[in-house]
Image (cartoon, rainbow, N blue to C red):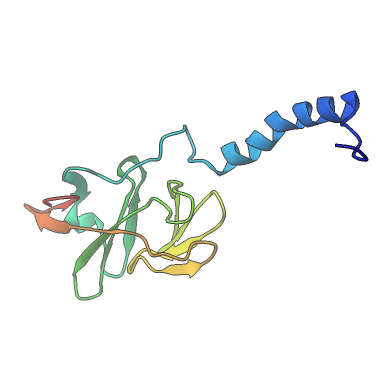
Amino acid sequence: MPGRPSASRRTVLRGAALAPVAGLGLAACSPVGGTSAPAPPTAPVDLGAESELPEGGAKLHRDHNVVVSREAKGTLRAFSTICTHAQCPINKLQGTTLVCPCHGSEFDATTGKVVRAPATEPLHELPVRAKGGRIVAGPEA
């Protein structure tokens, strides 16, 4: 095209050098530990003795990507701990608040609701029940 300068060799080389660096931003936002997203249980999992979970408390099970809580009335609830913002596994529980390590989203472990953005969707609730004094969560629990 007339009147339009072509890219200099320096401009082309600079762009080529920056392309891999731009990809690092995507890697930083992907789930910790790999390219595939972690998942909540696809089958029932034993989460320990029911007696270990106090009323009004919550317990994080990192190995299963589940948090289970017990309401003051004794009702059990369980949620996937895969953040609904960027699919990162949540690895921190402070009291009954789950904190995502990727972008700082926070969730109420007793309701699954978002208490701090950037996440806007609540955690996915999972079936849970007490069976023989044990807590079992996941599909067909």
